[in-house]
Every structure is written in C-alpha cells, then in structure tokens.
Length: 272
Image (cartoon, rainbow, N blue to C red; front, side, top):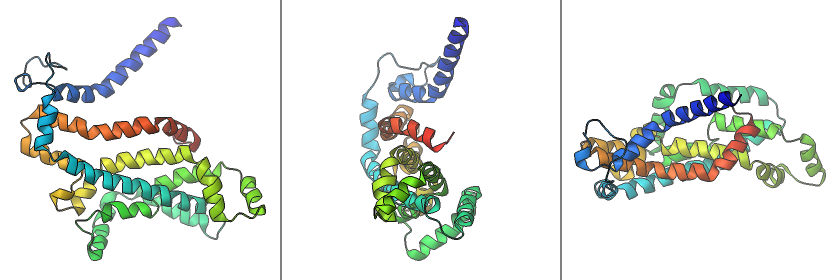
C-alpha cells in the first residue's frame, strides 16, 4: 500500500513537472546572458542570472502601454460579464415565462457555432457602427450576456437555490430585483469568481479579437503586442522570454487571488 502511495505521488510530481516545463524553460531563458543562449548542452538556469534582461525588454517593449490596454479590455469584460450573465441566468432559472426552455436551448446551441462562422457578420456589424479601431467591439459584447457558457454555469448554480426561499422573500414584499441583489448574488460568490477567472484569462490572452478590430499599435493589448516584439527583436530570445514572463504575472496573481473561490465554484456548479 505504501509503495502504491509513493508511486502515485512520484507520477503526480512527474506530470506536474511536464506541465510546468515550458514555464520553467522560459523563466530560465529570461535570466540567461547572451553568450549562454546557444550553449550546448542547454541548461535550464544560467550560472549567473542576468536580471537586466527584464529592464532591456521594458525599454524596447512598450509594456506599460500594452498593459494599460489589456487592463481596460479585461476589466471591461469582467465587469460586463458579472453584470449581465447573472441577470440572464436569473431569468432562465427563477422566472417562469412562456418559451423559456426553448430560448434557453437556442442560446445553448450557439456554443456549437465555430467562431469563424460569425466572424465576418460580426465584423460588418461593428464596422457599420463605426467601432473599428476602438475597444468597443472587445468590451460591449460582454455586457450582452457574456457568453452562453457563463449563463449556463450560473443558471446551474441558481437551480440549486430552493424556490421556497424566494417565495418567502416575495411574501415579505420583495420584488425580483430585490431578491436578485439581496439573495441570489450574495449566495453566488463562488460561481461568479469562477466565471471571472475564465473571463479574465480569456480576455487577457485574446489574440484574434484585437487582431481583427484594432489597427493602431498604441491600442494593442499585450497578447497582440508580444508577437510584434518577437518579430522585431526575435534574436534576443532572453529578452523576449523576459517580456513573456512579465505578461504572465497579472494572470498568475489574479488566479492565486481567486483560487479559493474558483475551486468552490467548480464544485457547486457541477462543472467537471
């Protein structure tokens, strides 16, 4: 039994190491001096770490400008999803209306649509509205439900809240809005944290959206600015790796901050 436990732990450590290998390699490369970049056999970490690679990358790479754009887009998406997705989910879960299940099925069927199918019609709509080369096409859709999967996850959580609790609130004179803000939202912190993390990571790493809708480099987010850095300074692999590590930091910090609620939200929403 003890041998099985040791083998299982060793296997888990090996799997974790394999998953972390790209990050460890990038971190080690970001600290290598120029002369060690093409050294053979290669090493994970240099003998004398060169921290100046980060300063050099920041000088060549308009990190703060890209960071500001990423923060605007990402925060806008997270706020939009947290406002709209719970409202839509509440309508599908706790308010009885004719055709509710049919419309919910239609909404869920949109998950099956490949993004390439809707890319051109959506682009034409935004061009008609004059939103090209602005942040609006990247932020406004989040205020219109935030995606079928987010609505589905929150609806699944709302379904676990007893209707008797809502009926008791209605008997006390509470309306739907009061019930939503005073009862449903405070009880939904774990699942809201879950969709916040999904939305944050999706928006932060979104490459196709900014590539399609943004034309001016001063509006590029980090996900679009990084390939620009690689194409211009690709031979400086250590500085490119340093810039990559810098772009990862906000995502890691946000994940660590929301980790507790993230795991709880996965359990409560039944998302496996």
